[in-house]
Length: 628
Image (tube, rainbow, N blue to C red):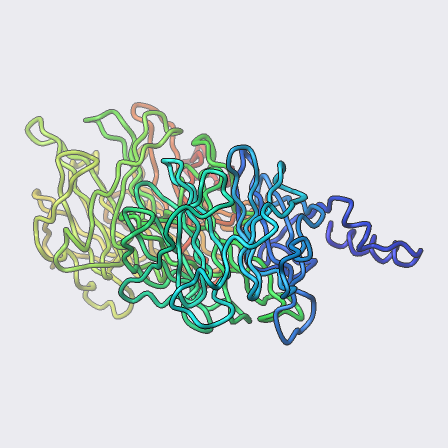
């Protein structure tokens, strides 16, 4: 709506003879984004992001509109946001004509950094070199700090092409030392002096195995690792490398993002903002857009437990509406991409635990499991990786999905039996503590077969259940079918001849969870595929752990779409507060609660939520309304 009002205002001002472009230079423009591209009222490229306090500042190049035949860029733009939804554009902070030494007229990629109370704006041109401007305010205006280039082609040893001295990226390390990286075809770096406008010492060049560097370097640090992200190949993809020091040596880690839509170039920019990491880039996604009329976009970014970055999936939804500041008091209860949550209360530790699938991997190809603990169901501690398929499981190395766990006390000692999906088989691991470490006692899958008579489906999504009436333990699993069997006393074996099928009805898909309350056994499951608009949770009841199942007429518990526009999904577990008839459902939803049509990629970006589970007097379950 705000964009519509903006264009109506421009039309009105033009009709009465006001120069709308001139007016815009002296005023602020407020707008609300709705996915990618972030900016739609002009063409922007080469993003550089800076966080100051509770505000994210986005600096961009400014492509000319329309289908250009080359890069026509005369100035830079600046925007800010405090929530990734509501944005403000400021008057032009800097033009290429502000650098009298430039003779190219090309306002190429830039980088801005805060140091000693001043904002330093490093810019590049198409052959005149890299310059630096300075301001007391992040929105500018900026002024040339040197009256000459900071770096030129003469500083780029080993090169012979005129556009080598471009794309500056500045990084200030924890020890206070500032560094500048730049280059095309070759990646150069050097120290900056304390004044930020002079090179300090020798200029060096980065090189390592598989380093197919094109341009657009970006340096950031996560925990104790340094990351060099850059455009690679042509058309450009984004690759990255890691190091223990900012000056290397760097180790190539692979492609982080594929070719951007409708653009030969892509320019990465990475930042942490309010506890969430973001990946900015540009594509040619707007109408009349292309390689020379580009648009800045943003996506969520996450790390694996080994500190590698998970591959970026480009989306039209972007990184706006799904962002809710995480203070551990709201949904989602876990920070980051997680799915298929299994919740448990441990009598040994007196704590609650959530065991999720680690999500965010392309094609659900995650390979490790984590757990989170809490004393109060509000504040959750990351207990780290409890099982790594690639290290701990000899028969599997990926697709670590949908775990289930149970605590059992034998001879005054607690044991934890952890059932998990891996490579579309089901394994079991054992530990003495709910946070592990877990080990594989079998060295092979526990389940690698379908029940007799079952043709389709997959051996995934285990659930383990202790029957308080008989004191027996049961295992359930299946995709497009539900299998069930009583476990032997060792908890890691069963009689295959006693496996039965309990598939509730044709709507059954996967994700069974079983619990007991007041004489009834409840069977919850996910209906339809995880990417389907009608992915939802239904339930049945029984009078024994092995059925038969009774399906209530109104058995829908949790649906993706609600009247309030908040979207819950499927695959859940249920928690009873010890000693009370107080129940909660723990489930996953899509990272963007308003994204109903998610497509393949969005199905990898889920988050764990918790809401109350309530019952009617007759024992039927009340529909759950997902909340924030």
